[in-house]
Structures are given as C-alpha cells and as structure tokens.
Image (cartoon, rainbow, N blue to C red; front, top):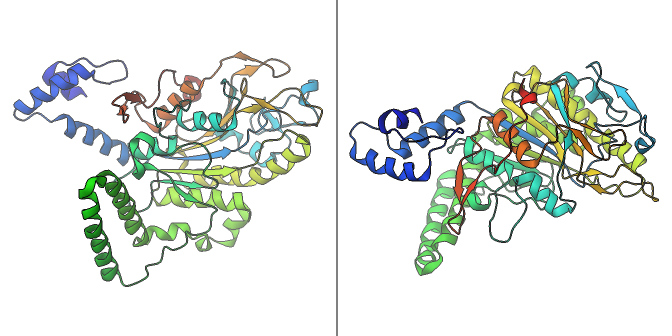
Length: 430
C-alpha cells in the first residue's frame, strides 16, 4: 500500500484500504507509468506475503449451543448454576466447570470471552451468523470463516483442500460469493477419505481428465460455461489431491499409540488429531464439529457426558500444538451458535440463550490465561465488555493477520467486507 501512497498520493483509510475512486484512478495511472507496480501485482504480493506467514486456524464447533454454565462460566454460588460445580485452573482466579479437568490444566494458553452476545436464537440462523459474521439473507451468499481464511491465506498451489470440515455440514454456508473452489472438503469423520486411490496408472488418469474436459467444452459452448468452469475447478482440485504425497496427513495410523491415547480413541479425539496433522501438512483451516449440545432436558447428566467427550482431545490439541512450536501460528477457536438460559426449565434443561455466552480461544497471538467480560450474578445479562459477532470476527482477522476491510464482490455487484463493523477485542492481544 505504501507504494501507492508514494507514487500516486492516493488516500488510504485507517484500515489500510484504498477507496474505490482512488483505486480506479490509480489503475489508469499505473498502466501509464513505467516502472510502477500494477494493482494486481500489489494485491498478489500482499497475498503471497500473508501466505508465507503460515498462519492456520482450527475451529472446534459445538453444534446445538453449549451451556456456558456447564463449560467456561459456572455459577455455583447462584441458584442458576444448578448442580454444576466449579474447579480451579492453572491460572489463579479463573475457574471453569467441573466437567473439564484437563482443560483446567492448559488454561494458561486459553482466553475465554464470557460476554459474547447476539440476537439470533434460531439454530440454523445462529450457526450461519457465527460461521460467516453475517445473518443469512436470500440475496447475498456470504462465505464462511473457513472459506474466507482459505481465500486470504491458502497457497493456491497447495495440493490438499485448504478448508476441511470434519463432521456434519450444517447450516453454515461454504464458499458463497468466493466460489465453489472455497467450499469445505467435508468428511463425515476422521477416517481417511474414500475413493482417493487412483483407479489406473497416473498417465492414463491424466488422459481421462483431458477427455472429460473435451466432452464438457461442447456443453460449455451451449451456454453452460459457468457450470462447467465450476465443475472443472472441483475436478482439478480432486485430481491434485489424490495424486499428492501429502494425502498421508489423512492417515492416523501413522501416529504412535501414545499419541492416539493422548488425544483419546474417540470420534472427537481422532478428529482433533486429524486437525493437527492437516494443519501441520499445510492445510489452512480445519473445522471439527461436535454435538449435540441442544440440551433442553436433563442438562446436567448430558453435559457431563458431552464435556467428557471434548475435554481430553481439546486439551491434548492445545498442548500438542504448543510442544511442536505450532501454537503461535495456529488460532484454535471453541464456540457454538449461542448459549443456554440461566434458569433451568421444568424438564431439567436449559433453552436457547444468545444474550450472553462463551467463546474460548488459544494460539494465534492470543494471550492465554485471561477472561474477557462478565455477566451479572445469575448470568442473565452482560455487565462488562460485551462482544458482538463483528467484534469476534475482527479478532479472528487480527489473530490471522487478515485485513477485515477487504471487499469481495457479490453476484449482484455489491461489495461485501470480510467484516462489517466491530473492533478487535484488544485485551486478548495485550
């Protein structure tokens, strides 16, 4: 950006973004000025710089809405806390729910936002909001966080998918306006993908792809050029993937028994271990889904079981990334679509509650061992440092070194910012 300022005197806002008028003026000047980089060159250079930093993100998404009281914000001193007790962590003054004793031992690397707040109490809409930063609309296909991160940070020549989702596809979108090439590669579980071994010798496989392209060209010339282009992008990605030696990252049997036991030989444990292997191999974004946290009944027994499923794998993931020197460049996010009501209902459960809930983060420059925000004694309302969804996404972008003001164009010609409004939660980085 400084090159534009020096050579052309364009205006740059506080986010480092060039206005559209100055951009158009700058492009025309650049085309006439010898020795000055074009806009495309500058954007490419900035993108390459970001990708060379090797940042990555692992999202652990708790579908159904995890109770804040039974996870990171217990309230044992209040009747709303119910049967859930609090335990000390390795950070003096910070307590979490009794169902996560292993997470209590790694809290020096974890920061908890206890003042997350939204207005979306519908599962599908809230899942979309927490994945994209935008409420769903019929006119704009907003990309998910994984697609955004892959678009901004991933190496275009990387052979594996840059965005991998393990678990249910859910209602959280995909590449959206960024295109199908930024959709998630979805795996039902942590088992190696099926149908990824070549059906024939590599040269013959390549010839078959060439024949397919020829057959599709006539269909494209009949007016289906966009559909064919999208189809060929997917086939090209799949072909690079199945012929890559990096496919070994999907095979957990290459890990030692000790490592498998460390994460736990469960679905979620295996998925967290797979996430570490994929990020280590160069994948930019991995989402691991876990559920069902929709505990409208029997919440204390059900969340004891659910916390028991995530506690060991999540703590192992954070510790393993740190030991391998990967945590500083890997943002780990734990969140769901909303929280649960402070009052326990007549069925012994908690209902949907977007007004105040938790998000936990580790790595990626986040300073662990701290809590941001508070709620009142009963957990009914945020009393300090409310964090909105735009604030949260600004924080993700700051951690991953992505410019949140970058605009992508929708199908109707409307520029859409990665994040619309908000401010990063500065306390997390201090």
